[in-house]
Length: 358
Image 1: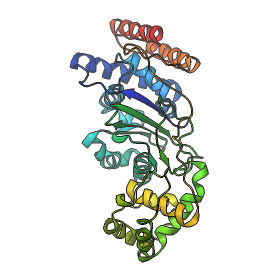
Image 2 (image 1 turned 120 degrees about the vertical axis):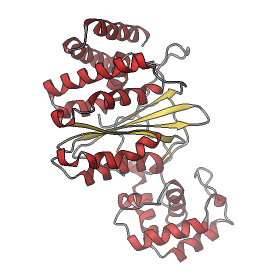
Image 3 (image 1 turned 90 degrees about the vertical axis):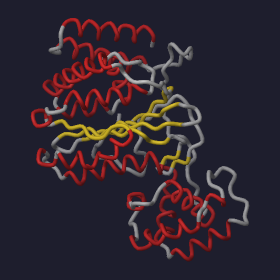
Image 4 (image 1 turned 180 degrees about the horizontal axis):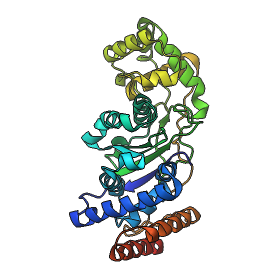
């Protein structure tokens, strides 16, 4: 499982201090047991699995179907492991809101403890955020980004976006491996409650559109702006999620000058250029369709349903086999952890409730 997403209802508030302090302690012991018995690669892989991540949040005692689970669990992991990076070789950077923007600096800060260049890790972190905010336009605005990695460069990401209209959050999981392609089907195990209108510029069937967009971005801006002026008098494809009035020619021209000077070698190179965001990509995608007939994909990149029923009265099917595997693994880890018996009992009690409700 490389990546995954889950949609969760937004619940206001935060974990009380008495609970969060225990979450930090239990999260630390779980991570230490996994690293001791399986290595740091295993905890990174587990965190990329949305089912396991959800079960972990339940073991830690948080509201199991709230979007707040994402930020609270990541926060507990980061706080719990603070100061143990050199000993474990396991590092956590990023967080919610403004903290997420400190991810590059935090990765650089661990540079002396790494066997790989922190610059490559910073690039990976930035590209993950760029893909899910600009290349997959699904109406969820990213506000949380946490980058997990070890000293040998293995990494995973848990990030979350919010749909301000529905007040639902969508969580994205990433895992590095030798076959990871940032711009072609990077989400191989995505799961989500609902599908929506999405411009998916990293779909396999959108390769022609990506290639055409990159070619257009390498053209002199004058030609592109002329084409933009033409389409303002045309009826645009009904399914394309961009209108002529959405294209700011002055802003687009300044970005196209930058892309023209950069001469991107491919879509990943185009996507990595600072300033190239969702609006620029939508415009290039539209022009690629109109000029070259290269249609993009509008399929929401969801592979199967993963929903959280329960107290809100909306039960949905859950992959119980995967959940059972996650639960069994966590039970084994908790039973071996060094936390007090009372905290273990609380964790098992919470997990038991979670199992019955799911």
